[in-house]
Amino acid sequence: MKLANAYDDEDYRAVLERGDILFFPNGGFEIPGAVRAALMGATQDARSFHKNIAYKPNIDQVSGLVDGSEAEVVKPAMREYSRCALAFLGRILPEYARAWKVDYASFRSIEERGRELPPTKRNDLLHVDAFPTRPVFGDMILRCFTNVNPEQSREWMTSDPFTTLAAETAEKAGLLRYAGASGSSLHAVRRRMTKSLAGLGLPVVDRSPYDAFMLHYHDWLKGNQEYQANCRKYRFQLPPGSTWLVFTDVVPHAVLGGRLALEQTVIVSRESLRDRALAPSAVLEKIAGCVLTE
Ligand code: SIN
Ligand code: FE
View 1 (cartoon, rainbow, N blue to C red):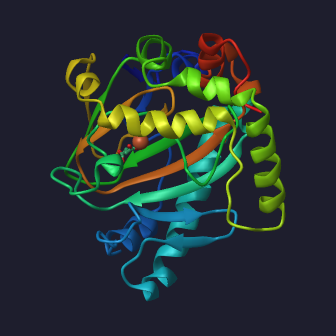
View 2 (cartoon, rainbow, N blue to C red):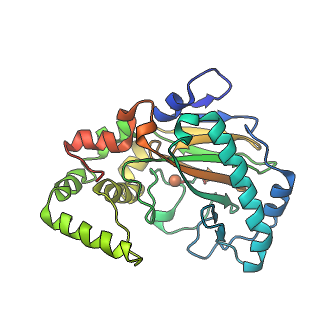
View 3 (cartoon, rainbow, N blue to C red):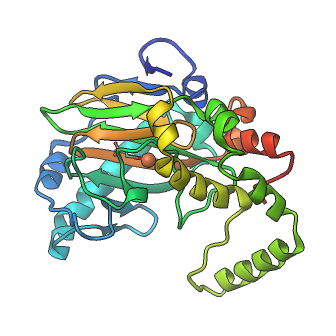
């Protein structure tokens, strides 16, 4: 597990899929000065359930601000950041861009060191990402972070990637329960009902057994003291102005300190991977011996 300097001539997909961090020490792309200026003044609501200020490109909305009237300034800035980040990602990862789904962008304005959050929301405990409201059905979560703090590094800790993580802990975490459920007729009935309710526009989430397991795994890892204490750890200081890309469902990660980071997420189709066997869904399906992504 390492920071792979993006200027070394390597296939970027291979770097990301094997669970390294693709690192652009000089930032990789320009974030307009006006965007930085607009965001530095934004006041994030630290007490609300919003962990960050989020921007949803598909509906052009921001959430997580203390003062709704700030949206007038923050929304265009986030829209512009999202546009620049997506153009950059599309340029360096064209094979992924052909089939990815654009997800949210975020601004992380609160100091992470000493931040008080409920246990499963804590950012300083190692975990793999899973989104409660946006199931991926076996596709993958690629995130592009930029540290826009002019003075302070962002401090990350990571651990061995998903192939190692899952071999050591997926069964202990209860994977076979999810695999067993995926073939049952009760599961099939429940899924059909959820799908039709979702189709009617009701606020229910239709997720695959893979998504259900990954949500559980996120919390299980954060709550597992043995894993947190004894797993192999790698620490990185991500300096001011740098950008890094990582599959946050492949790489267990935690942020220990720093404030003022921008981030854009895309959901990468597992069909567009260079090595499909490295998708967490493929890794889990191999261990479970059945399909988990339908
Ligand atoms: C996370 O995805 O767990 C947080 C990463 C960060 O904000 O640096
Ligand atoms: Fe995370």
